[in-house]
Length: 131
Image (cartoon, rainbow, N blue to C red; front, top):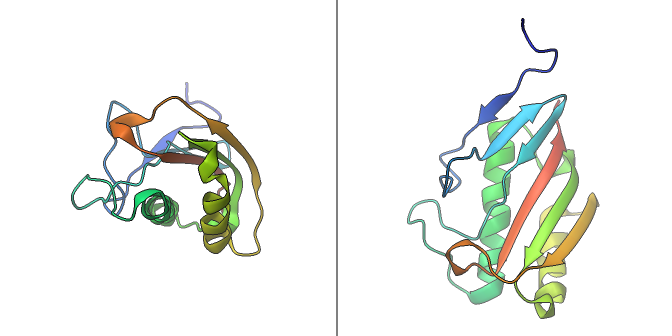
C-alpha cells in the first residue's frame, strides 16, 4: 500500500552534510521540514569566521541552499525555530534574520539552549510550503 503522503528526503551539496543519521530536509504533506543548520562552511565543515554574526550568516546561507534544492526560497518559509546558546545574541540575530528574510515575516520561536553540536552558537530549523 502506498502512503497518502509520501516522504522524500532532500540534499544539497551547498550545505553541510548532516552530522548524524538524519536528512538535511524532508518533504511531506505539502511542506518541507529542514533539520537544524549550524554555521558550518560546507566546504570545510568548520564554523564560519566572524564569531556569532559569521555563524548566523552562514546558517542562512546553508538554509538558502537547502531551500533551493527543493526549488524554494525564504519567501516560502512559514515557521522557523532558532536555538541560541546565549540570548544576549538575540538582537544581532534579529538584524541578520531581517536581512535574510527581507519583508517576509514567518512565525518564529527562539529558544536558549545549554549547548549546540560542535560548540555552535546558533542553529535554525524551518518549515516551508512546497510549490
